[in-house]
Image (cartoon, rainbow, N blue to C red):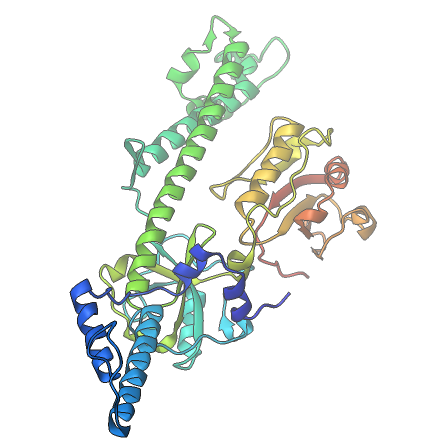
Length: 448
């Protein structure tokens, strides 16, 4: 439901109101100064001193007293307004949030590398840059303000770069172990694999044999292969341990980014509010409401460290935790080998169990709850799928492509609270379905 900014103010908590209308407070007067002001006002109003009996005064004195009182009231109102406005005049915010420029959930502002300062010395995303270039001076923008995240940021005694390297190394170990588990019972026979073949009748080309060994590494292979034997049990245990460590390091990276983001939000809030710009700290992010004119003129210390993007309206208005949570034991029988799910760092992976897959979907929805409530399901099939296949999926939109060579593709856009896991399981078990990818990317493909 549409809300006016007045309603947003009225519904805000004391803390939100405190940061919404940022202030450069007028210092409280000292007791001596206050006494002096009281004394002069009292005398002007016809008293000898504060607390004394009033003198009789003529019309001239009465007029002077009234004028003095009006001036004091005017000064007080000006002081309050100055405190609320932060001391810097700015255009009033539109009463209707629809008159504010917001971001779009179906487009990401920043992809890959952080953009170079490209608008009056600010780092901006491409959408914001495009909107700024076509806006007039008094257009109000809702901006998300953050700082450029550095791999040199230290968390729990290590830099983010070091943690990333550890994760990459463990991921590489896991990949080698997965390949070894697929090929170990063949590689254990050594060169016989391509000369005479295995006792089970398997025979490879020499090129495939050497490429596979090179991918895993001779030193790595020596730990699991010996005397025509493959220690599969050890390889399985080591793979589980490596995958657990990768997940742990993913959580550490998330925690590091979260800590940095919270600290950066505080720095940004103070910098912009000290400059008299309306600021709201909400949902772990800093929102700035500013006209193009004021952004053009604004200069801040360390300006080149700030990253400005268009804020999402859902990101601002969504109530934390207002998302569905699926019971991890509610559905079983997924074709897990076909399904991959997006995780926190933007990559995707398969789950090892039905319960883990459902937990991954829950984690994805929670991680993106302030960005969107639409889950994207992308299906690859060896043949075109009829609409009847998706009859039990209450989707918002569907995009299908015709079969191209060996595959046809379908994109389903489903509200998270309408996601039918039982129907998703049934789709994954269709023989012609090759892959099912679950994410929350809102980009829409071109259909044929």
